[in-house]
Structure formats: structure tokens, C-alpha cells
Amino acid sequence: MKCVELFAGAGGLAMGVHLAGFEPQAVVEWDKWACDTIRENGAQGYPLVSGWNVHEGDVRQFNWESVDSGIDLVAGGPPCQPFSMGGKHRAYDDSRDMFPATVDIIRQLSPRAFIVENVKGLTRSSFANYYQYILLQLSFPEIASRKNEDWFEHFRRLQREKASGRLLGRGLTYNVVPTLVNAADYGIPQKRERVFIVGFRHDLGIEWSFPKATHSFDALLYAQWVSGEYWDRLGIPARARPLMPEKLASRIKKLKENPPPHDILPWRTVRDALVGLPDPESAKAREIPDHRFQAGARSYPGHTGSPLDLPAKTLKAGDHGVPGGENMLVKEDGTVRYFTVREAARIQTFPDGYRFHGSWSETMRQLGNAVPVALGRIVAASVAEKLLLAQSRELSRNLLNTKGVA
Image: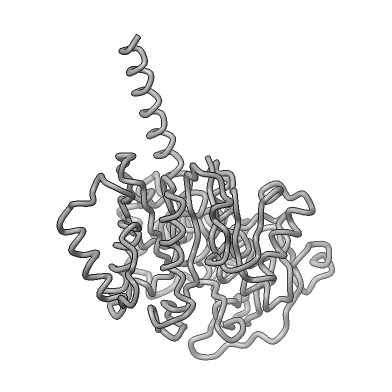
């Protein structure tokens, strides 16, 4: 199946989509460093990005007529700064709001489906109307904004169209499903809450819901403080294990009486993610690409780093440099240090063979903006399954019609 990738960054979502069976026809990203990351991996023959058609520039300036027709999927994460908790919260007044451009591209390409990812801040009550406006634009991309029409007037017009039901089944419309998810619930070693907006073209008749969670905090607590399987698996002897957190004692007691479902796996932790990586200050670390120690980490209120035995805090890109607390590890002795690029890549589930271009600060920005590769694959695989089933149904109907004519 064919896809295009918008706002590709370092390629996290794009690689996940590719792993799910989609072939990128165009990969568009404005940031030079991120483009260089993808290009250099492709030039070195890295299989997941080899042969990608990477375009450095604004998605609004790209010639979308150059892309073949019959696109199955449009995927991308529009810049999140207008809605980020750490940003300026300007939403539609922010020049970096790329949702209008995303809708324009969907209108032009008429893909069978789309996957749009963004920050949890998009769902804040202060953005409620604009969030609904985004969903309606994606549902009815052919109802474009008129000249000199502000966003709220356009929003009201879209609301009226939805209420009338006139456009359902006619023209280009999408069944849109927005879902707020925590990446840790899907095996990503990071507490990363993000909104996924997934849409299927209405004429396909597809019903879809976000994949079920596969991991949980309770399962992690059970593995750590009831069965001890977590420590055994990681080779941590009893004398070296930390004390059970007192604030979780009652919750752990309940887990002893009622263990979590057998089909739910434990959250993956920072310690899980870093298995096999040497201390970045050791001589062995020099043998591993992107695994260099970065000095200067310090802890202060609100910036306390990620504990080893929980999923990492959300890695962030930052508006004025790399945020310290979110990109730090709390060592066993209680001191802190920055994650290396390779460690941050592990936390974002980039494969070890993938290299990053730019300084530590620039590379960490790429990683902070990325969609975890494994989460992108899970979402895209679910979408691919529905598209293939719809295609199969269509082929069956065509065969039946052909036999009927014969």
C-alpha cells in the first residue's frame, strides 16, 4: 500500500508506518537536521529508510500533483508547539499550526485513510472548540474555508453541515476516531500521552477503534513487588533491589489478592530499555554509536529525571533548548545524568542501527519530537488490516458481479 508522510521529523512514525506494510511515495520535513538523519541512514543502506523520497521544505510548498494517485494513507504529526503544555498555547493564532495544511493535503490526495498524531495539550478545555474544529475539518475536508472567513465562522458552517447529514456518503468524507493514549500501555518504555486522530474514507464502510492496551502499571507492580519476576529477569539480586515504595503499599497488597489479567504485560521501564548498553562514561561506550556522555545534568524542582524502574518521563524537544528534567536518568545512587542519544533512541524505540545527525542538543530535539517507532507500527498495522479487509471485500463483490454478468 502507498503512503505519504508529512512533518516526518527523524522518521519515527514513518518507519512505524513502513513496518506496517506501507511504501512511502513522499516524505516531507522542513528541518534540515532531521532530513539529514533520514538521508544519511538511507545512503548507508539502512533498510527501513533506504530509497525514501525525502523532500526538505514546507508541506504547503510541495507539489502534491507529483504524487501518484491512489494513496492509501497520509500520516504525520503536525507541529505541536501551538498546543503543547510547555508552549505558548496560541493554537489557531500560531503560525506553526499546520492542521489547515494537513486538511488541504488530504483534500488533494483523497487517501483511503489518515493517521494524525499530536500532543495531549490539544485536548485541553481551553482548546475545546478548536479541537472539535480540527476533527470536523478532517471529517469534511471538501468544505474549505472561504476567503476572509475566520476559523470560528468556518467551524459553525462545518457544524451545520454535520448536523444536516447531507454530505455523508457523498463527496469526500471521513469517519474520524480521536484517541488519547499513553505509549507505556503499548510497551513503550516511556509515559508519553499523545492524541491519535485516525480517519477512514466513508465510502469504504470501515468501523475501527484504537488497538487495545497490551501493558499496564499494575502488571509492572506485580512483577516487581509480588512475583519478583522483574528483578529476576534483569539479574538484579535481592540485596541490590530498591525498597518497595511506601505510597504504593496498599495497591500492591490488592495485587497480591487480585493479580492483573494474565494477558496484560508489565510496563517496560528505563532499565528494560537500556539492557546491554554500557555506562556512557566507560571505555566500552566508545564502541557504540551515539552513546556519548553529556555533562551538565542537575536536578531541581520540577526537573528530577526518570527513575530506572519506571517508564521514562516524556522526552521533549523544548522551545529554547533541550528540557533538562525530562531527558535525565536518576541513577541508583540518586544522582542524575543526561540520557545519551542512544539511550533516548531506545526509549523512543528507534532501532540500534539507526544513526542521528547533528549535535547532542539538536539530536535530542529530533527524538523529543518523534513518535515512538513501535507505537507508530501498532497504529499503522491496525489501519492496514482494516484497509486490506475492505479491499478484499471489494474484490469479492467485483468477482460476484462479474460472475453474475457471465
